[in-house]
Length: 126
Image (tube, rainbow, N blue to C red):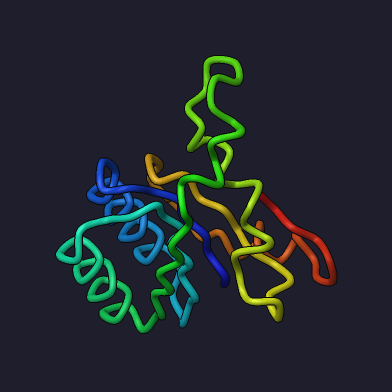
């Protein structure tokens, strides 16, 4: 599965917990895409290690937070809420299907049925 998480250093620990819960119920090799405006190297190394322990690959994708400035002050949301919009352009072009996971959730069963339902082609589940 291609999994996308978005976080900064403030939620790095929660991202690790979400990933561990994902790995607990979803065996196999996965591609984990971690989109961020920056995290500490120590946190990054821990996430890389977690993915390696579960035979999965961690991809660190840095996004300049200046790209989010036009979204400042929209509604009650932080401008970081809008990072999801940029997922298709930030990921490698060969990827045609991803499952986005918020970093504050716990996975309690396999997500393979959901991932299979997404389909292929130009479908995106965000």
